[in-house]
Image (cartoon, rainbow, N blue to C red; front, side):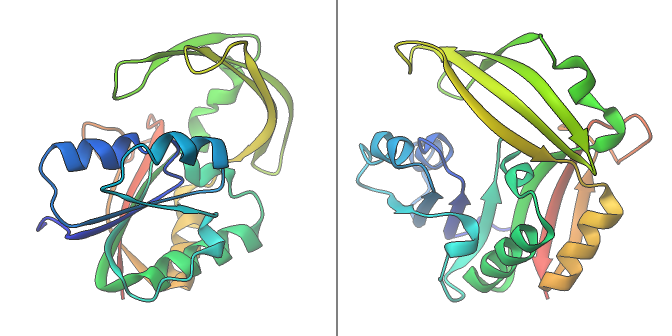
Length: 211
């Protein structure tokens, strides 16, 4: 795969991924899209990258990017079929012919949410900052897990609790949405070691190409 000149990060947060790309020598267009103004305020410290407020479905670019990414399982915040369809349609429209969309989602077969309730996890972002994450699971229905996520770390004066939901799509259902939006799955892995999806896989890591 050749290095993409124009990259769109959907759900970019504070912009860590794009900043690392720029610092690693990427000289092309880098653009981050996120619906959280506070996150973008932090991202905008870097003026050599474009930052746009909005969600995936609100994107209105027309064939301007070679690669779109969604990291951090951000794809799972698309809860309804309409949200998935409208977001994929906008991402497809933003990509040039032959462009790729790379993202990951947790595999529902692993049933990770069963180990979340009351548990606390330590995560480290690419900058090395430690974030303590805990969950309270309220309901699991129709592939959607409704929960409260609490974050604690140097970014917040006190723990931040947010009510939210995550959708878990199996590979076949996910593939159907991608096909409908005009994507063809080019590669799909079950873990970050690039191993294939198996009955033991915890991830669905997808690289899809426009068609």
